[in-house]
Length: 455
Image 1 (cartoon, rainbow, N blue to C red):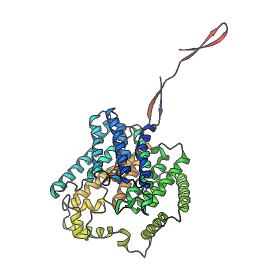
Image 2 (image 1 turned 180 degrees about the horizontal axis):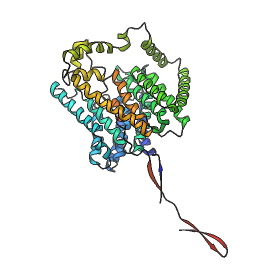
Image 3 (image 1 turned 90 degrees about the horizontal axis):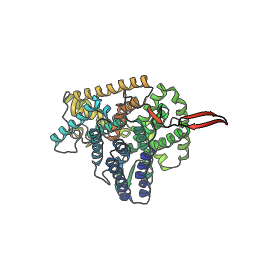
Image 4 (image 1 turned 180 degrees about the vertical axis):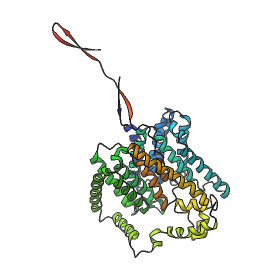
């Protein structure tokens, strides 16, 4: 046997399994068989999860759960109970508990464990105070998703496979909703609204950045520059057509960070920009492109009122100083967010920012804990970039911070970004040792010449 050091490999069988689960969705939606498409996706996914659980393959099991997150946020509530995602993520954490030795790095990451315990406590107190178990329940999604992403980093090959699964999810969600709305990612089907632009835009922004950052290493595309450019263009088009301005901000800030700190990405970024420009030109006459231009102009035009640009978010930011002034230290308590937002801003909505929600519900104390966590992740991300030349953990943290400006980041997509942030300083399996079989060949001298002998 020989040994050599090499990068992780893609788990093609797992990626095929996920593609089999997701594949029927666009066809089912095209023919109007919405329930059949959603239920087939869930049924096939559960079948594969049970299969890997019976075979005691925790990394396969967890990888499929992580891959499915961007699609599950679309189908839940419509075809499966809304909180099914939390159940699946809980199974992922159970895998870490049952295979503790294989996920030893997860159990040593105290900051992540503290975040999980804190989110559970935050939800539990919210439930006790409000009497509604759904109050801040998404905080569990947030921390559990981060945990699942970090768990996969124990075997980088599974993490990279899950990331390509996110790319498949973006294309699947975009294709299945394409005929049903001009804001891609949101559809009006038989009077029922499905999805939200940011549910498509944020995963599209993430996989776009992953296709550029670290030369595409996190998608195992570092040896395929042309394929990276093509996939980046496709994901970029879905990002543009989502008309999600919050996702646009995440992508722009990420691209700016890459342009400043990763010089080797500047040429790929230029190639991607050219391809994306050609792609947008090809769709110039489509309604999706017209809506994208509309929302872009709505954002940058000086003639559009701020309230119209932010669709109610500006009123919440304007009301926040009064909220913090009336209860500065402790806030109004976990679970009070919607009521406080309505009382001070007049909108019966949850706070459209993680910072506003934490400040309103837990005051300066909660904001201090949140910024302390983000500060630790930024520090680890910078050190990781300096030590291992990988910028994705830093992009994950900064992406979450940008994401939290426009929506409450306490959800599974925010957890994916935060999970990447927790990878800072975790160098597990950057390279792996592979074994290869070989034959010992000897050459013997005989009276008739040289003869090969296999030992």
